[in-house]
Image (cartoon, rainbow, N blue to C red):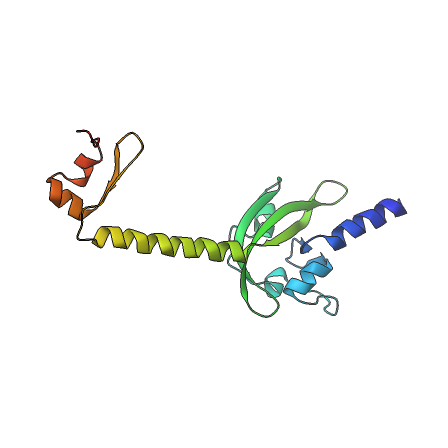
Length: 178
């Protein structure tokens, strides 16, 4: 039993940020990675999860504790923005699982955090780039036509509709050979 306990403790401490939160929103256990990300909890008697890592899901229906209180019994994941220990906004995938007592009653939530801030930043740059590209096409004085490998029109800008005399909806039903 001691060996299994030590094994589980090693897994807990060598994983990414993990915490266990009770049904009153108190963090009852956190690993070192959690404390490195969200702040030192060792010197605090009880701290609420939303005081440790305020974010977009706090005090909402998608709060993991709220979800377990409403009956969630399976593991679930969500992408949320949270503040780290320095107040910086970061994006995380939080994998949550109800935490049960010996009788099977939910008594809290186990949460594992994965920082996806870099991925979200890349996604945002991609969205902005696509908006700029779309603006270039839509505002071009030249007709721009996009077709698939079989010659079916997929997109056309306003200049292209003026050149052909067809509406965008009409052109998107046509093929280059028409």
